[in-house]
Length: 115
Image (tube, rainbow, N blue to C red; front, side, top):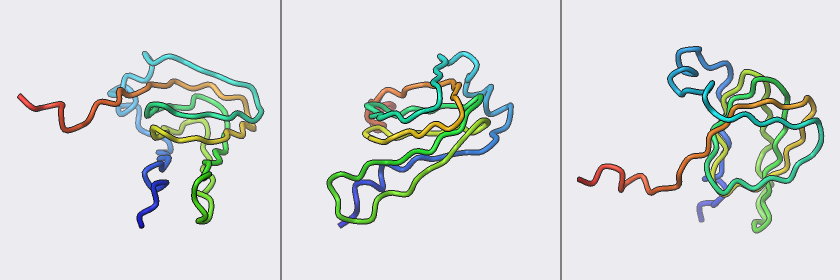
């Protein structure tokens, strides 16, 4: 009876340290931006992103389930955000977004050290 949507949780870390950001190599990640508006997005891979500027409310979709809809997640400039693979959502951008982002390969975690 565990809800599948619990796996699709967005995590937000506000104001990560400079050392954490440089450890992740965020400055070398590609950049993406968008003007204010509403965007329908589907994440086919896990994405980690760091907002340089902007403000976003994310409304996750919960199409198949009768349970209460997942909660709205809000984040903005200075936040490090992890968006899970398989998430379908609407981004309501109130302040134009500039972000660094990185998609993560979807290889099974157990096969990484099997030698």
